[in-house]
Image (cartoon, rainbow, N blue to C red; front, side, top):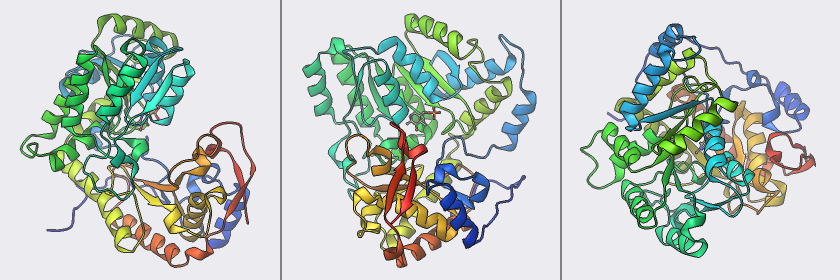
Amino acid sequence: MKTIIEPFRIKVVEPIRMTTGAEREQILAEAGFNLFLIRAEDVLIDLLTDSGTGAMSSLQWAGIMRGDELYAGAKSWYVLRDKVREITGFEHVLPTHQGRASERILFELVGGKGKVVPNNSHFDTTRANIEHTGAKAVDLVIEEGRQPTSRYPFKGNMDLTKLEGLIKEVGPQNIPLVMVTVTNNSGGGQPVSLENLRAVRKLCDRYKLPFFLDACRFAENAWFIKQREPGQQDRSVREIVREMFTLADGATISAKKDGLVNIGGLLLLRDAGLVRRADELLILTEGFITYGGLAGRDLEAMAQGFEEVVHEDYLQYRIRSTAYLGEKLLAAGIQIVEPPGGHAIYIDAKHFAPHIPPQRFPGQALVVGLYRHAGIRAAEIGSVMFGQGTPPPMELVRLAIPRRVYTQSHVDYVVEAIIEVFGQRDRLRPLEIVAEPPTLRHFTARFREL
Ligand SMILES: *Cc1c(COP(=O)(O)O)cnc(C)c1O
């Protein structure tokens, strides 16, 4: 059978509301054509991000009621710790309120002036936390990972030649750790192969360097390995996940992605000395080591989320439904970053709106066009987001898919709407910025349509 059904029944519903065209015109004008500045209730289908926007299961909600809210050593902490140990094999588990808190603690300990941290592609908060300590963040994804139409199966892979070149150039003593992001979020949600992770481990061993994972989407990455990597088809996702983590000396995780919760994060470590120092920082800014800035109920929901995310019927549905959206757009002649990634589809806005030059923000014009036409919210990943630094190689619009939230008919609606906007794409309007902050302007900048 061709239809991949949602592997769940719906027990609680949340109404969404369609606005009129006239209302959306007014909303857009009031928000200065920046979709970060509109109210979520004015959005029909929200594809701004997959972070913390997922739906929890009945067992997760049951965990919320079971949550033990005592300060130290609460029962819920041990439930989470044991589940994370079971899935990852890591002995030392530190809870944090979200991924960037784990990053801040880690890089405060190992970063600093003169240090260089390689990664396939740093996520923006990872880069910001590294640079905040005075260290440098370097992206070393393989060449295929920079080409939107390459169908290479593991476009998130680290370029091993470039990695070894960097280690020799700056000296291993200046590299506190090597990081690999799975899946490669900033590179289109593309997976990293097990072979590549093993090779990075080997290279790290040769130069005695710690190897860390940015493991936000570890389960989605493992599913791609099972589907695409020769010799991995007969292994379970659990086994593959276990091997990915076994290769690493540590990991930062935002549980708002593959933790299937709305808030939470983890820092996983092996080195006992590092754990001691990380515990101190955790207590200083997050909370005690058995809750890390979260309520007991959050720990319970996270424990159950990490269990559910490695269920293969869930992953089959998750990855297939993202690909479904991508395939429908490609079939309509709309260029996306190929092949479809795990958590999002990225539309090539230069191809979509060739009449708008990068300095007039084709991605933002498409984001505005999608909301204006159909009440859909997407995110610009192009000159608005990166234009204050080095101009980006691509002008993209990201359609991020919240986990277990929208059904196939929602996705069909999105497809129809995008195809309609594509049919009248010459009506998309160039924009100019009328107000912007000095950094991270995409969150608050205001625009004017030309
Ligand atoms: C979301 C994300 C982070 C940061 O996590 P937050 O929970 O948003 O702080 C870090 N790395 C990657 C790859 C991410 O996708």
